[in-house]
Image (tube, helix red, strand yellow):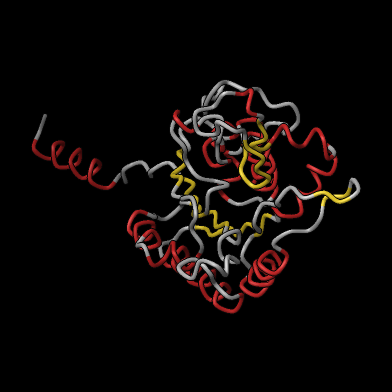
Length: 260
């Protein structure tokens, strides 16, 4: 190889950019989306199985954590940790509201005006990093009255919708979608998507059984992840091309977050 050829080869290698990192989906949120270990099964957050609705190679960075509001998520440094790791081309899903309304816990409680300001912080941070923010209204709480599933977390859902409109941020209205889905299932069958287990279930965490209309079992987590994926696909964002939504109805149960 001549010296000139060597220089040309070296110049070509330097000029060709390295392949871009595959886009990632980050989740900032609460216990309804969070990760749980095998010792917590059958409790699962929808973020644990969102990857089952994506092409292989699209990583999910699930930073959601139980008991967190926008206020406590920021105060504990979780916001800053995402800001350090978020990169251009990534997507940030932002779902809060459940704990923001908890007046009895001042470390969590976030009045609606402050909640709006905090959502703006998440949006601005994502855009500053070259990432795509997506707002999610808080997933509905299972509450029925005479066969009708009631509205829940309305103040925080409406605030999220308003911030999305005002900032032209894509929105997944998970509050409305999940309420409609569980209404379709009906009051009795929808219990099978939440932590409703009698004493006979024999779970060491719930020796007397549990009746929880907020947190999901595996079936519920997979169904809600599918609802999120269908909406994410429909937003026609860059990440949408990598979304392969599963039908929410009758999701397979695998004893954990494994995909097929």
